[in-house]
Image (tube, rainbow, N blue to C red):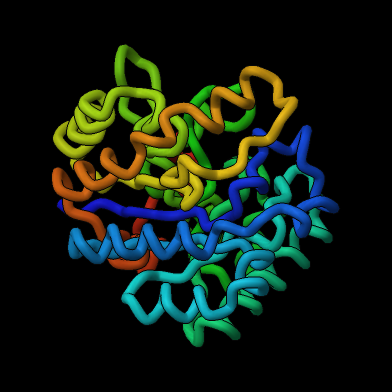
Length: 291
């Protein structure tokens, strides 16, 4: 079974955990490391003969235009992460619509390919946000991978479906949730990110295998380029929780990724879920799933 390897392409200083100390106005004053880190991700995937989906911020694409071409040239799917890492809930309907249209346009112009996928920053697109899904459809997207069915203090929709579904019953659009393993009637995160750095690799591997064997479905894994950059500049004055979440085990991530790429088979989102994206009418709508 092939699983989805995805990369949220953003700078190390653009994450929500650092927002209290790094304002958007200060982004341009921080040293850029995203291009070099993303190149390392591409090299790691090449060495494992694996492909993935790169959800790129429009902000990054405009500053690193050649990187977009290299992602496409090396056989990966180009997808959107919005323009400037704004949470959907903070933007509101009008600004969100403008954001996703602009991001898609920038990426398509630079990559020369259709951009069909979207991932909301900080998994901030919730299942009940019909207006946001309607905006994504109007902007030309075909799928989203923005919902994380877990309970978390910063994001998550624990009651959301765990597998692919139609967020709008009357629309040809697919939500491909982040992977969770069902353990003791709870959804346990199994999609990578901070949990991949925090938990022992053996446990992450076990959770993915549990989903593969019990649910008989492909998993969705994600990472950020800055997670393999243990030399990134440290931001001073962070609350302890933010400091812990962002910097924990950065020095272990690359070796764990190489093990992960060896232990499972990985491909692009649009390939692994090609049937679901092409024929969303065969998927259950969200309301039906939640019943």
